[in-house]
Length: 172
Image (cartoon, rainbow, N blue to C red; front, side, top):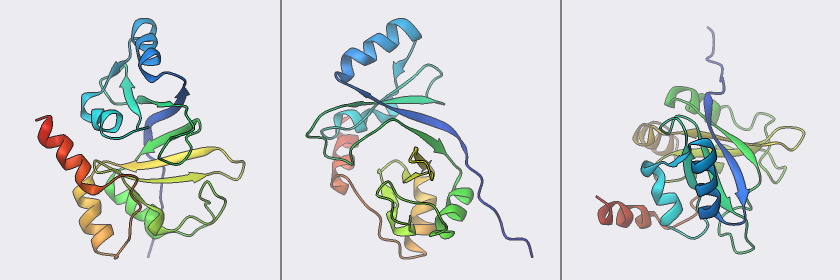
């Protein structure tokens, strides 16, 4: 019987560190045609230090602008590449862990290292040479049901779970 093998999905976004997120967004808009992606506005406005997602193709591929600061509440952001995967492929990846892939700390990546971003799920990892990657899945409810709940996974969070709900209620 052949076991399904994980394959990285499409390019989703690239992490960019900038000293002034709004000034950078303006430059990318004026010179390269990037615009903020409203769907992900919560990440920029919902909590201190979140990324401003901008895109020149309607959100298919994005730049995630992080303001470089000492007080960043999340893990220190460095330049990195994020890919997006469908739920099936994402679950294959998650259930294969640990498998020789390391977290940014250098420790083995485990299924419980999944991050709940309220709109998507993600794993942060590095290759053997220290290059940073993120794997995202935007099929939020499917991953919650078929992976998180089914496998009793305890995800990481960078902000309180009710923050996104309050933000959605205020911006509908």
